[in-house]
Image 1: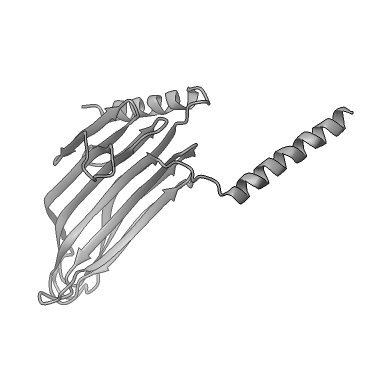
Image 2 (image 1 turned 90 degrees about the vertical axis):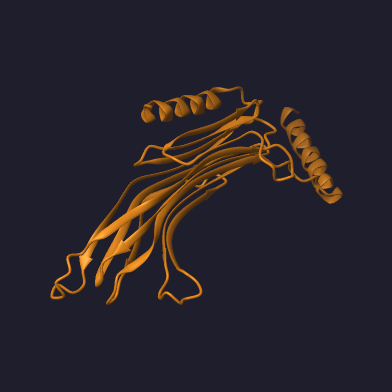
Length: 246
């Protein structure tokens, strides 16, 4: 499957949304993560151990869903557990989630009066890091979110690593670097997470995620005092225009 064509198709759909009549609200959110890599540093060159990181047991969650009501039950929903393409679509919008083994995308596109749409990519691996070694995980994240009419969207991307300080530790140490966009805030930068082992091998998990969400949230009904200010403002504007014509 050609992932560039998939993303291009999503962009074409986005352009279609942008070109739609202004009387119909549309909104879009996107989260991408690319270039997952790592670098190793030998913390003790004299210990005779060659720095090494092993990644095993990949776990993939690539999912899209629509939540048509407040019950919390998605319908439709599409979930896969291997690199690939997930998509759900209704008249109210669509959600796309893809992972091609290197890059991840989460995309949500909404039309007017949409229920909640969600797109998620979560990938993680078990890691084993040799003793006296530091590792820096790196990825590049970019997010975009729009707000139009009663439609609100948000986007999120994260690079993370977790491990136990000792076999008897009650909780994992969790490290992360992330980006979050809401109401039209765009961001993009390199994400970094660094950790190191001590005198013994360090085991844990490392991964990344992208997420895009969106839904229609009706504006609250104005209070009577707000209505009064609106009417007063309209009256003042009308009076000013009348004086100008006179």
